[in-house]
Length: 372
Image (cartoon, rainbow, N blue to C red; front, side, top):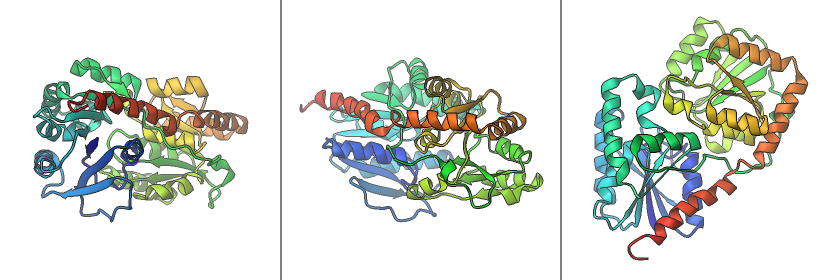
């Protein structure tokens, strides 16, 4: 089967799609991953699947989404393909156009509940447009999956069609506890890796850092909240203890993570998409045997109950976060217990096992194709 996967990013940082596309290639499929070229895009490394970037005039907003879907349709319609995998709602319109003849299959890979993200949920008109688009387009797909079981249930209820779950698990590694590699400064490193987007608790992290003189904060990533985070650190006088690392290639992340003492994944519950999420960074921390702070949301609570690898934060508040960090720093035994929980979870929460779920979905789709 020839599969075209479409995303709106520039492909360089998309580890989920790299794992998915690589697994599909190993299973015997031909895969093309299509993204977009940005002014800051760097050359892409060689992969077992083909990669293509599209150049757009607009970089954000409704004009970008309209232009990008048009360019996807105009480019891909000339290719030979058996299936399109539209990743997230912002590429699904093109997917529907490209498969409307009924000769090709359409798969929807929902990384998030698009209309309920922080950028959208507080804007009634924009949210209404995306919800209407989703309810019109998602039922036209032949298969659907998302990143967490509870999110799958919410999407199925919203769109009226079933969703499978393919968790965004990392590849297995032999990396051991970052505590074995103390940071050069001697301070405890609090690590956040990922997009610097609204609703990610970045200001809460910095305000907590101001109460924790023995810690420093590493923000590994970039995004629209970068400027606000810098200004917050300067206003609180702790900018010398915040490292804005920017985007780093995936191959550099393990070395950075090994120097951390505690991972952070803070989310604002005002976003239903975040409340039902299972963020890849929460699982990457586990694979690195790095204890981390997670919100006490359903998926993180379930993993904590099973493995004991997280500290759970009931409220997104700087004082609560600082208290959790201080208590953990004062109890080496409690920290070691979290590391042990990560070691247990790391052997099970791996992509090598999860890819079987993905391949089963595609195998069933392939068997139902008209020419098979």
